[in-house]
Length: 151
Ligand code: GTP
Ligand code: MG
Image 1: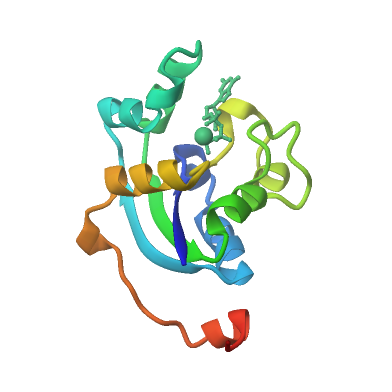
Image 2 (image 1 turned 135 degrees about the vertical axis):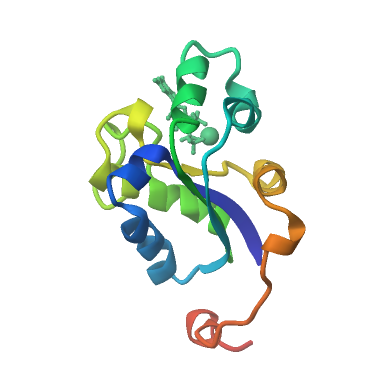
């Protein structure tokens, strides 16, 4: 199955939304294969968001991501990269649908509580940036045959 990088940003951590966010991925049927709490340096945040370095909000965004603890995770499952983004909702919480994480739990684009990789290449790059290979755990969950069926 594919893997994606998901991070609870400092606002989500400070607001006590860690369990709420993890729960949504867990209940969906995705499998948590790596998790840690880190305070990224500003340089690290700039690496993570390098695609956005020409944008006017880049500096503030990197200051914000490095302003406190982040919960960094890797989630695994069929279609998790694309559907994980659906669970998260649109970038701007004013436009996210109710029922999505940002739609239910955030109000403004600069404090949208969660990050998710936007495609297979960025997922790989972000997992490599945030985790050492030995921090990723490969295992079989007993629930898998109930989530996916047996083929
Ligand atoms: P991530 O999952 O965090 O990467 O969000 P995204 O993929 O939905 O959006 P994108 O990668 O385009 O932007 C990264 C982050 O920059 C967003 O999550 C926002 O926090 C922030 N951001 C994006 N657009 C704006 C903007 O117009 N203004 C401000 N202040 N922040 C923005
Ligand atoms: Mg993005």
